[in-house]
Every structure is written in C-alpha cells, then in structure tokens.
Image 1 (cartoon, one colour):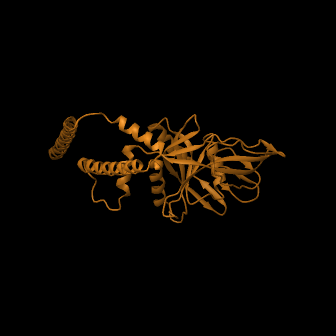
Image 2 (cartoon, rainbow, N blue to C red):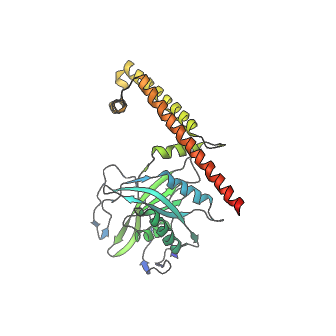
Image 3 (cartoon, rainbow, N blue to C red):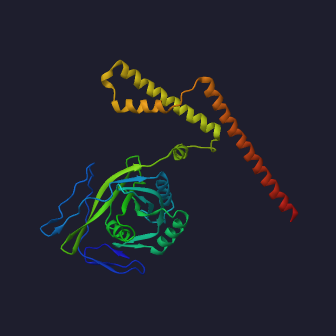
Length: 320
C-alpha cells in the first residue's frame, strides 16, 4: 500500500523491503529542448538533477491499443488504469516501447494499492515470448499527473534504471488522444528526499507499413468485413495516386515560383525517384501481372488446404 499524505510515509508492496520517504512530493512538467541542459549539482545543499538519461520515447501503436482496451475494460468505479511498459533502451537515450499490460490497482483515501504479484506473473509470461523486451516504465490514463504518480514511479525505479511515465488521455479532452512521456529525477536536501521532479520528454509514434494498414482499418467508423488482398491493393494504389498528385502540384508551384521551394523536400523527392527501378511500361506490366498471378495461386492453395482440413475434421467426427 502506497500512502500519499503529507506526513512521512512508508511503502511496503507485498513482501518487498520497506522503504521510508520523507517530505512532500511535487512535480513541474518541463519541455525538454533539443540540446539537453545539465543542471547544477548542488545549490546551498540542495542536490539538483543533472542531464537526463532518456531524451526520446518511441511508442508502438500496439501500446496505445492496449492502453485504450484496458481503460474500456476497467473495473467499475475506477477513474483510471495503470500498467507496465515493455520495450528496449538504446545507447543514444531512446526508449522504444513495444508492448504493455495493465496492472490492477486501487486508489482511495490518499493510498495506492498495486497488485505486485500480478505484475511479476505477467512480466514472466511476456518475457518467455519476447526475451529481449524489458521493463522500460509504466503508463496511466488521464490528462496529466496526479499525487500518487511519484510513488508508483518510485516502485518502477526498482524495476529499471530510468523508467518513463507515459500518460494517455483516453477521455479525448481536445478531440484527440494526447500522449505524453515523463522522466523523473529526485531532489534531495542532504540525504533527505524532498521532491520528485517530472520532466516531459519527446514522444514519437513508431509505425511500420504493416501496422499502418491495420490502423487505417480500425480508424474507419463502419467496417462490415475485412478487406481482401485486391481491396487492399486498390486502396493502396488510390492512396499512392493521391500522393503523386499532391507531389505534382507542389513541384508545379515551385517551378512557377522558385523562392517557395524547400531544399529538404527537393532532396527527399530526388532520393525517392532515384530508388524507383527504371523500366518501361511493358516490363512493369509483365512484372505486376506475374506478381498478381503468384498471389492468386497462393490464395487458391490456401483455400484448398483449408477445405481439406475441414473435410478431414468432419470425417473424423463422423467416424466416432
């Protein structure tokens, strides 16, 4: 049980060693610039945090879906949910968050109770499937930080060196899901802990092409059935055509008014065109048709295999 009143409090999470904290807890979200500052190590006996170890958090879309799903399935009467973040930490100070799972907890009367046994069991199961994924922090739903965040952050500090705290606004206050990441440092006066300082760090959505297809499907309000390969191919071609039209419009505008051009965009377009293989229309059409025929053949074989399995299953049931 984690106590959050103003008096000295103790933390004893189900069999873990007891830790004593003194003083009040406070936080001040700070926007981290591109060049990380280094704070003064000591001012009048007050020990301040130095350079932050983590500067960027890359969040996988699966994490946001898990957070939203846990919020929808939360217990009756719970205002928010918390959970553990799994991923990897790079040498350049970048944290890649790949997965997450909810952890049962209860907040009432200035206290926070966390199911530590459930947390350990879930991490062991995830670690068996993905041994390379480690604990990188924790998440909570809501628009910002609350009093109990400092205590939960201290618990996860025992799980990893520099845990990040990810907040997801599932209530969509500004008609969007706001995602923020924080890193904490301790402020001490001598040997006495007086405050926990939360710094806001940069967040990026880490998405690959395979994830983008599923996300676009989930974003659609009404979906009667999942699209097949041809429907997905048609949607991709239509989107590519729209992007080409936008690019042509931009290039025509730059040709008419050269001062409105952007050198970075020009280099990006040049690299994109250089990566396209040079072939005539006939060769491209032949290659495309052969690829489509290969896909159709694989689909036919898959359907035949499925039919054979269903038939074998029915024959085995009839034999009994």
